[in-house]
View 1 (cartoon, rainbow, N blue to C red):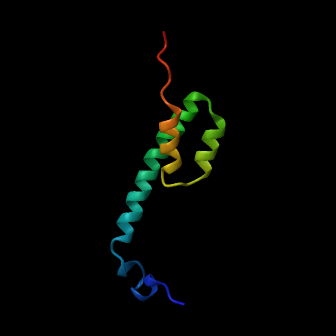
View 2 (spheres, rainbow, N blue to C red):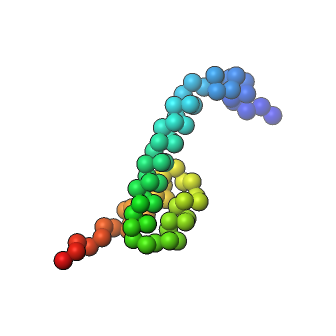
View 3 (cartoon, rainbow, N blue to C red):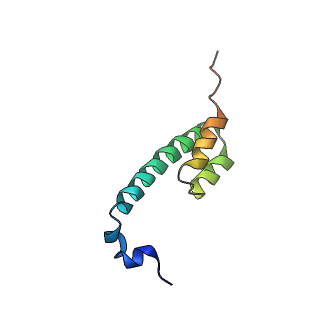
Length: 75
């Protein structure tokens, strides 16, 4: 059984692969940082640990940020 990248010479045969991985890594780091910051500020330890351990390429982090909402303004 052969895989497509084996016949193409590995990553040299797919020049688009390295930039794609770099973009996905940057995308994930940005969303993970924002979500971890918000969960830490809110004292939500379970969310913090789950997002820290799971790598979902930003999907879980975006869902958290959209559903957690903003803190109510202090009066």
